[in-house]
Amino acid sequence: MTSPARGAGRQGVQRDMGQKTLRVIVHIDGGARGNPGPAGAGVVVLDAGDGMALFEGGIFLGRATNNVAEYKGLLAGLKAAGELHAAEVEVVSDSELLVRQMTGVYRVKNPGLQPLARRARELSEGFRRCTFRHVRREENTRADALVNQAIDQKRNVEDAVGLALH
Image 1: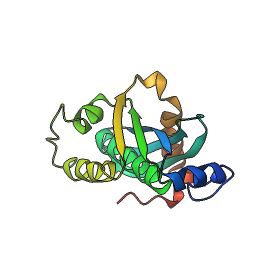
Image 2: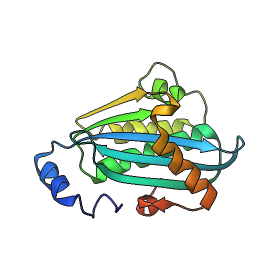
Image 3: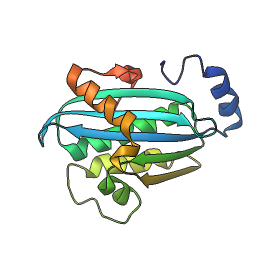
Image 4: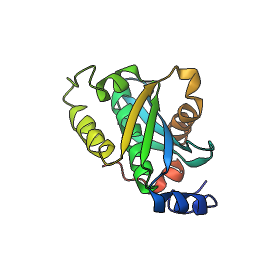
């Protein structure tokens, strides 16, 4: 895969970008081995129309908690969708906590998560529409695999190299 700004799927993306009609599904995941421990985040951005993967990446985070890793995955996913000039974003996560916090059902009480949640809200407001959906872990396997690949290799994998998470 290539970054959102380059690649084989670029022509279709450019067509949609110009019309500001691109709808994407962003699968995110985060994980830590130990809490805290070695951590990573995974992002898969799909074209909602045809299911084509527009971006995939795993981000190695070093030492972090599971919840921080989940939010770092969210930030990377929203950034990738923004770089693709998506108009509508559906974020799919197996973290019930993150989804409930982002939809306002739960407050973000953890001081370490508050700036990440604030930044995620800012990024999500840049889209015409941004929704969040919780799924079971079995429905988020590709993002999960990217998390584990990044942790195992102790480096960013695939397209994630160019993503800035701050």
